[in-house]
Every structure is written in structure tokens, then in C-alpha cells.
Image (cartoon, one colour):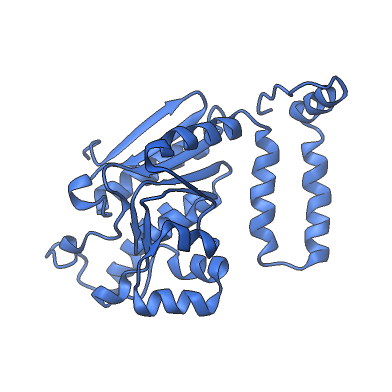
Amino acid sequence: MSEDVVLAQVSDKVATLTFNRPDKLNALNDELVAESIARLTEWSRDPEIGAVVVTGTGRAFCAGGDVSMMARPDRPQTLEGNIDRLRQMQELSWLLYNMPKVTIAAVNGFAMGAGLGVCLSCDLRIASDQAKFGAAYAKVGFGGDFGTTWLLTHYAGAPKAKELLFLGEALDASKAHALGLVNRIIPAADLMAHVSEVASTIAHGPLTSFRYMKANVHFAASTDFRTLLDREAETHSRCGMTDDHKEGVRAFMEKRQPEFTGK
């Protein structure tokens, strides 16, 4: 398996995964997805990593599935084979959404189709002012994958999700921001510097607290208020047992910035 389709770097508790097929606008193929899943699985379990950044090389974050692969003779020839293959590939979105680390999409360019799903699977989306977003499935007669349908519905609402899926129209960064699909818009030249700053702040923060914040926000989308209150009683108390909580209290009393260790 070539390492060139994905670039992986770890520096100062921040892991960065870069899709690296710029000639294909970083379109997803089997190799890129498998390598990405392997890296993210490793990082999700690494206590020395506090944040994960995902981005792309060149003009695109990810332009979706590689259309040139869709007619290859070595693809599974049965419905069941295709379902199994796609379910495995979609672990990429699930890992970004569910891993106990904060994940950040640095959207440098096009995020289309499956690339939109991967982008929306991250906890935060910081976009270049040159970024474009769209659900391009209708253009090739597909229905939606990599979580795009669920994520668009939760973030933008069902009526807008249907519009984006049916019409396949691209959104610029400002429109995506207005819909709540993007957290911040940054000038293209400053994107990675800004993302690095945000990622570093998170990676050096109270990581146990972030873990439970992420899990509780996800849980809130599918449970009732009383159940979440009970859950918060448990996770809040767990966070209160950490060294970072004790340091935070000391720093507050001493009127200084806390120095968290992630423990």
C-alpha cells in the first residue's frame, strides 16, 4: 500500500492527516480510505495525541468518490459485496465522528459528495474563503454515502438537506457558514496557521473533559433532557477527578492561565 496517497504527521500532540491525490482533487479510492482508517484508528488510541486535523493537498479537501473507479472490473459484482465494501470504507466518517479526540477539518478547497460527508464528520470545520461545498450525488445517479445524509439533516435541517441532495448545487464558504456547516472562515493564505493554532489549543487542553463534551453532545441528539442530565452528573464528576480539573481550580484561584497535561 502506497503511503503517498495519505500524508501523516504528528507534532506537539496534534496529528494531521492530509489526503494526497491532488491530480484527482483528493477523490477517495480504496487505498486512500484504507490508509486513512488505519492512521485514524492508531491515533484514536494514542494518549499522546490531543487533536486530529484532516485536510487535502492542492485545490481540494476531497472531491468525493473517484468516479474513474466506478466502472472498474475488479469491483465487487454482487449487491452484498458492494454493501460490505462501502460499509468498511464508511468507517472513515465514523472514526472522525466518534473517536475520543477532537477532530478538525481544515477545508482548503472543494468538499463534495463523500468529501462533504467526511468533512461534516469532523467536530469542527474551519474553511478557507475559497472552499466549496456540495452534495454531488445526483450528478452521477447515487443516493449519498459517508454519512452525508444524516449529517446534513442534523446540521442544516431536513428541508435544506433535501434541496442540497436533489439539486447538487455547490455552496461557497459564506453560504455554508450561514447554514451552520462551517464554524469559521479564514483567508486561504492563513488557513493552516489558524487551524494549527486552534488544534494546538485543544491538544494542550483538558483532554478528558473534551472527550466527554464530544460524547455528550452526540448523545444529546438522540436522548431526552432527564437522561442527559443523569449522564452529565456522571461525566462531570469524572472530569472533577482529573489532574487537569485540580490544576484549573488552582490557576483560577491564583489568577493565572492553567497548564493542563491532558490527564
